[in-house]
Amino acid sequence: MEVYIAGKGIISAIGLNVEETLQSLKAGKSGIGTQTNLTGRRDSNLPTGEIALSNAELASMAGLSADYSRTALLSMIAAKDALADADINIKGLKCGFISATTVGGMDKTEKFMASFIRDGEVKDIGRILYHDSGAITELVAEALGIKHFVSTISTACSSSANAIMYASRLIKTGVLDMAIAGGTDAMSLFTLSGFNALMILDENYCTPYDDNRKGLNLGEGAGYVVLVSEKVAGKLSKAPAVKLTGYANANDAFHQTASSPEGKGNYLAMQGALKMSGLEISAIDYINLHGTGTANNDLSEGMAIQRIFGERVPKSSSTKAFTGHTLGACGGIEAIFSMMAIEQKMIFPNLRLKTPMKELGFVPVTELMEGVEVKNVLSNSFGFGGNCSSLIFSKVN
Image 1 (cartoon, rainbow, N blue to C red):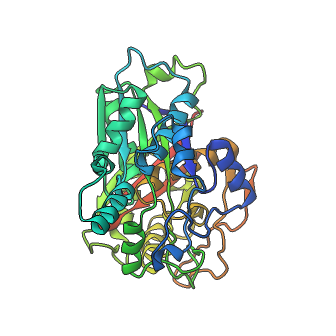
Image 2: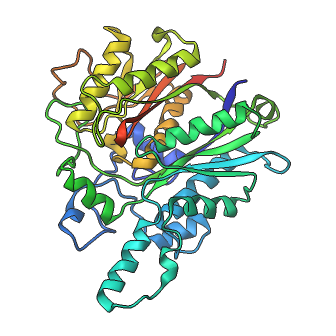
Image 3: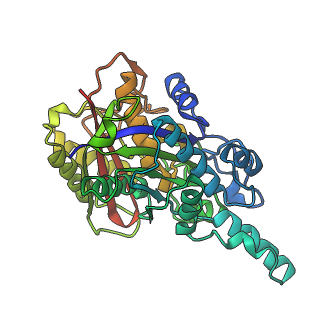
């Protein structure tokens, strides 16, 4: 059974919807800049891919209360847009919502803790009711009217890719007819300080796959796709242009926060996705790199890519130089970028790359490529704990 992508919804630092996002990618417009929503810590001065809207403004877009976590508001906006884009009536269908996140409702918990430490008493306990990652998913599922199947994935930076993978499996086995899958994460001081303590944040704008890269910039956002069965796809008013043809998850069990130098887990994930798709390596037209900008990630991913593709590495780029690393949301956001590459016949640039990595025999694309036939895209999402996932999106003939 084949699984089709019927709709997509996205919000990030480069756009509040699909169209704004596409225009930013085409213009080479990065969303990374000075943090404004988080204040009071030295870490908050670090550049991030922040969405330039307040919680009240996001709540208005989401149709939810501003009392809810920023993570939930972002999720609702993107998931609602994805469902609208699919133009599908979920009544009578076995419908699921599989959402990923790493930070959950941390932003509200931080505000609760600040008041508790200051005043020494419990006030506004409602702020932490949605701290748990699963609670964010359930809140949005309820608002969307999805009750058949609801689940949360939290596997670090591969979370959204795994959510999409899981949704596809549920559709293939007949558990679901359709599913909204992807992920969401909002900025929090806890996340920013934690990554800074690991000494992997760049104090300037990140430069993925550059020989002089110094680390990543964090970002926030949400990205969801609507996956449907062949039966449902055949009844849609708008025929899907893209299908999910391959996916795999692997783990090299090397280190809590680093991939093995040779990228064993990365290699196994890409190899597994290719095997499922039935495609020859020469059929991959574009690789959306995980490409965080850290010394470890870019080297291990690059080495694994060379091991698979040899001297004929497809066109590739990291789009995190646009959005920052959106953690649990990146797999969903970059799944949409991969789909855009197919639908728009474009390959997006790897911004700010000036000096190619000396260890690698390939260089990511640094200028927008238009009018390019893109039939198959490999999208990588690799997380802490060695949790590595790869997805393959293909053009529907």
